[in-house]
Structures are given as C-alpha cells and as structure tokens.
Length: 235
Image (cartoon, rainbow, N blue to C red; front, side, top):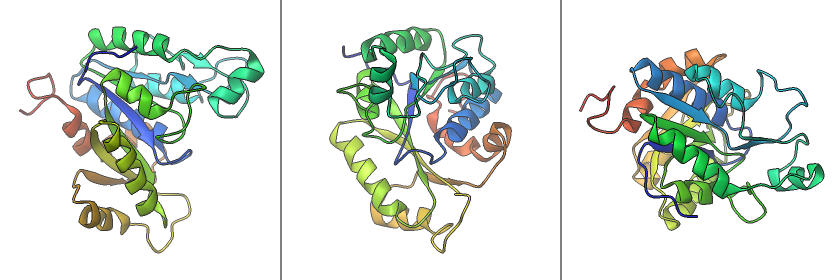
C-alpha cells in the first residue's frame, strides 16, 4: 500500500543497530514538543521485548518523550532479540507493514509531526520482504539518518545516503552520535562528511544520559523538521 506523501512524518533510521536512534528520536520528540507542537513518536516493531511491557523499551521511551497517551509501546512487540522477521517466525506473529502505515497515517492526521523509529539500519528488514527504507517510502516520509561518530562512519553514512536517494526518500538531517568508546576520528567525521558529500544538515550529538539532555542538543535539527507555517515554526 502506498501512502500519500505526508511531510509531517519523519522516519528515524540509522546506518546500523545500536547507533543511538532511540536517543535521537526521543530527544527530537521532546525538542519538538517544547516548541508547542503536537508530536507523536512511534516504533512500528521492536524485538527483544520482555513478556511484560517495560518502560525501558524503545517504544516506551519515545512515548515518554512526548507524554502521549497512545501508543505507549511499539505497535508490534517481539520477544526474541533478533531481526524482526526472524523473531516473528519464532513467535508466530504476522508482520504487516501496511497495517503499521495505516495506523501511523491516522496519527499523522491528528498531529503536527509524527516521528517513526525503524529497527536497525536503512536496509534492515522489518518484515520478510520490506525494510526501513520501504517504510519511509510508503509513508511518504522524510528521514533523519543516525550514525555513530567513529571510524568507518563515512563509508556507512554515504552508503545509507545513497540507498535513500536511490529510492527517492529525502534526508532531512544526519545526526552523528558520540559512541561510548571514542576513537581518533570522533569529532572529525561531521566536517569530513560535509566536505565529501556536499550535504550540510549534519550535527553531532554528544554522549547524554537522558532524552531531555538530547533535546537541548537537537534544537537545530528540530528546526529543520518543522514545516513552514506550522506551530513552532520560525518561518
């Protein structure tokens, strides 16, 4: 199912797993909420979740950042800490991207902006046949691309940018998150990426311990995401 283009939907995707997508997504959610916008943050599918829903889940952290009543957790929760299609087979769960898109589209109709966090990287499978890139394309969404600020990120980020561009999915911003273990390239990758790619909407998120702290650092990115004329826009 192809959803109509909706510029108020932003997919938070990454170059890999564990690069800081949830902290970036939650930080942006809080920053946008602080601008007076009606914001919803959604994770369509999350694996490695406990039987009892927990506040530590990515979907729950995103919801806490906006204070939204629903959804409070990922739309589909899977037990095994595996790629969603593999975890879903183990659990006997059907992964339905069209259903996710329909639900997200309903949220978008009632909100100023909806942030949608994928799982893994740009081409990581969310269903047996579809990726995070497919999710963004079906939603008519822009993306925020998250990468770790470490050696190797130039290659990973450029490949992800090319994959998104090839599919006609616009990149609204790139966030390089500072890893727990810095290396000599940390702090230098953003400028190198700007020079090499010619793309300038790139920022660095230092190590932070909360989405509130992340929000303070991501105000500029939040500004890039706000549509001209919307509440919270300086345009």
